[in-house]
Every structure is written in structure tokens, then in C-alpha cells.
Image (cartoon, rainbow, N blue to C red; front, side, top):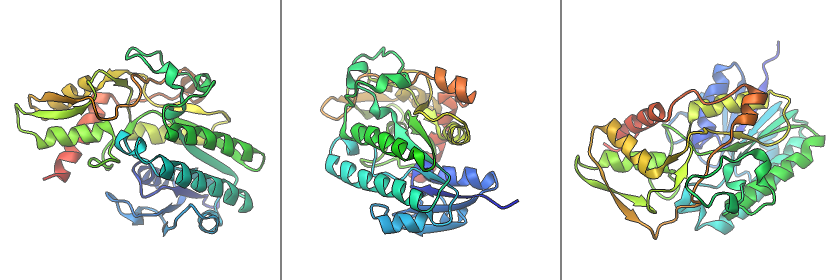
Length: 317
């Protein structure tokens, strides 16, 4: 039986390089493509790794040449410190990446494509309380995302769905994916890994900076659960956008406390309400993904944070 060839764009990024590893373990021939190599894993985990700027069609054509299935994860993105201050880069770069990936997949007769969207597509008016009602896929419209990143993701969902006449398209809306081997410092770092870094670098009895008042809420999904959900969605018959995330709502204060327990430290909090904190509350309604994929996260937040904290601790010493 001929080995199926898959492409992972964004393979130099956090979710992308984990997905490369997962697909290789499943027996696929995997081509990874990114504008940079993975920071925390070897590019040789892929059968082939190409450094390409996917904002250009000719590079997307190279990337998709001879490929059966595409996992389109490439994006210019980061944590709140990035997406709130680099709006033009996010819109221009990501629209170019996705428009050219979609067209190249058509021209190269790709059979199936997965697109990684985001919970940032959901309307701001549904996320104004900490005790937020979990977001169903149908809640995306009427559309008023809270950031340009959310608007770009929503546009790209529609873009890829329009190409559904040429190849099978699957779309996931990720809810705060976290784990080891991801950015933990700087403006591209997400809250879990950034907080792990702050706690790891602090003395017992010290304090760390928390953006906002710490009462804002989110749900967080560990990377191993995420890639399993992506794979199941890719090979399902479900054609509409689907939440991939956890439905356990926690505050940022709760998360700091969990990490402090893992670290065996007493850590105080210094709040900076001038820093961006996004919507007040966001949670995933997983009823649909449980129904159509028989999938839900298996790894608890505490277990995922423990794995992430222990990895981050080794990186900063």
C-alpha cells in the first residue's frame, strides 16, 4: 500500500512540530514547511523540511507538490502581547498565507485539507463575563470578534470552505492549546507557558506579574489531546468548523495557584491592569465534538501544567 504523503505548514511552530511527530508515529510520509526551523525539536522529525515563505504562491505550490493531505497551521501569531499590537502584520501575512495555500492545494490536486482556526472568531458580546456561557460553534455569527486576529481567522474559515468544491476541507477552532516545547518568553508566549516561566524564575515567597486582575477566565487544552482531536476531525465526515479544546473554565488566578503548587512554592501576584487581557471570559462547548468525533480531552489541566512547568524549568536554567 502506497504511503500517504502529508504536508504540515507551520511545522516550525508549537502545534505544528507536535503534529509532525504525531503523524510520523501514525506511519505517514511528512513534509514540514515553515519560515523557520523548530526551536525545540529536530527538523529531521519530518521526512522533509522546507524553509519557505508561504505568503507567496510559488512557495505554496512547492510545498503542496505531490501531497495528498495538508494540515494548514502556518500563521503569524502569538499571545495577547503580540496579537493586540501587530494587527496589520497579522491581517496581511495570514491572509496571504491562507489564500495561497488554498489555491496551491487546488492546483496540485490535494485531496483533503485541515485548517486551524481559533476561538478568537467568537463575538466579543458573548465573552463579557468571567462566568461565561460556553461557546457553541453556531455562536460565531452575528460576527464581532474582539481582535483583528479573530477577524482574519473567520475570513479564512470562509475562504477554505469556498475551496470545498475542489477538495475536502476540515476546520477546527482551537481553544488555548498549551504544553511543552512552545514559546515561553516574549510577546508570542501564551499564558500557561509564560506563567510557568515566571513561577520557575521566582523565589519561594516571591511574586509574579499577572496581566489584568487575574479574574479573567479561559479553558486550556493540552497539546497531546489537541493533535489527537485534529487527526480525528481530519478523517471524519464533518465539514463545518468544530471546537477543539477543553470545557473546564478556570481563572488566571487559579492557574497561577496550580503552577505554584506544582512548583512547591508560595507565589504572590502583582496585577498590571494596563496590559492586554483579551475578552473577560471564554470557554468551549464540546457537545458537538463529543457527538461527531467521540473526542474530548483526556489530560487534566493539572497534569498538562506539570509537564509544561517541568519542561520550562529545564529551559531557563
